[in-house]
Image 1 (spheres, rainbow, N blue to C red):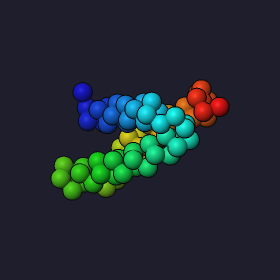
Image 2 (image 1 turned 180 degrees about the vertical axis):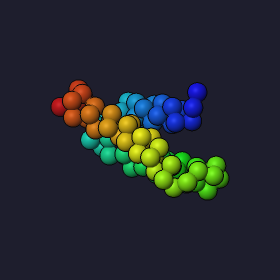
Image 3 (image 1 turned 90 degrees about the vertical axis):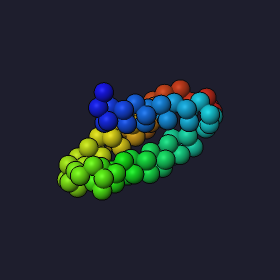
Image 4 (image 1 turned 45 degrees about the vertical axis):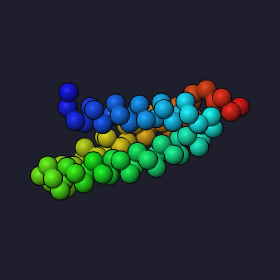
Length: 85
């Protein structure tokens, strides 16, 4: 399994854990976006500084790694059930 797929799965799992742990959907989504941004930037830096990839290569992958779970989080917050309501 590729590292990108592992990161995508990790992002979705983090989202699930936060949504189960925090009853307020908006708060859970905001916290997820912040944490996932930090984690994904760390992943980008490891790719550039230690794995030898260029900034352009890693930036394209970073958009996928950060953007996909973030889009799922926002979509779930907007269209999913809200236990707070």
